[in-house]
Image (cartoon, rainbow over the protein chains, first blue to last red):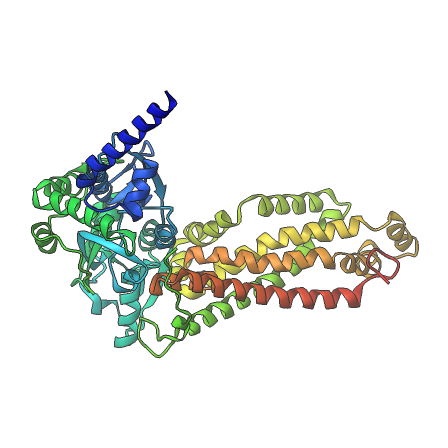
Length: 301
Length: 246
């Protein structure tokens, strides 16, 4: 009896292997294998990158990037034919996000992470999900219209951002004698601007609109200046994992070319959003339109 | 784990132009940490000594004031105190003074706020050490001083403090070490000290391990020097016949 049972088991195993082999053309490895084996995907998100990835008033993670990330998760789940895929959410900051992706705590991070060449040495980036320009926010009556007006003034930016780098470089190259304040996060940078410590706040335009919408009197503020750079936001994943990257890229491309992305854009940038029901009124820019038409993972630098 | 080590990153020119290297940034932060911590420590010692003495005097108003001072500065988290000094106090000043302060060089503003914050926070802790030093003396010493015809201030000056200060050198060493470590909190208001430069290096080069290892070594270096310095002081001032004395 026992013999028959074990033979039967062997036969079943063989049959399933043979049957499933054509479906999974290649053997799974890397992140996809980990996800399939554990039934869990670890997602990294931001806590206050409005409207990309942040907490609403019920401490749920929401946002434009987060919604796209969930689309990717759905696609991965379908690809792997999993009946159930648990999502583990892990908040990340601009300082620890790269490390957490590298050491395996986070499988995929979609927030407001710029795809650049230095970072590409450590992690891999998916198809871009957004394109921003770096500009200035200032008081309407400050007399600041563009970057040259900042000479000799106090200017604030957020530590660890491309804006900080560009601003310091501009100061050095053009001898502008600006005093540059690097605040810990966007909220603190805006506070520095609001309390009059700085005349202008340089940051990604989308985030500036986000801060403006949070201000006590949004009508006092205006976003000005020629964009000093364009940057592509991408989702981060581990380096040298082509199978997972292909799955993520494919899912994002599908969302973008199908027109779904435009709807998601409208939801987060052109309509009132939680927690306060603010409307960012940030129209779809040309670079983003182009991206939706032809998804790619190129860095702008 | 796939990590791309690159120790040469410290010698690369910075991404902001100019002829500085990332090592130069680290050194700037190192100097800032030392300048900030030492200046705050000197203030903390002076204020802490006065408040500590006041806690032990018989006058109820004076000792009550000193107790309130210690409890306020010891029980509010350091980070909150820093935000109060940097963000809230300038708003509470008369508008003209506040605005004048806010228009000055931001590094100066950050340094002053950080120094005052660290100094007062640490002074409350120093005050407690001074008080415990004074209270650890046998009551006979104070009584003997007064019986000799010294006034109370003279008894403190010539009898109790010379003993108490020497007894509290070992616990003061810990506070001295702490002030260097606590100074890292000041990176949150944008002061570019050692920890902030370490974080900045990560942002600019995406080499977190090299940066944080370098920062760790720098802090260790500072604290080893402080420890040996304080041990030397301790050896020179220890009271014969007491614990640790010869």
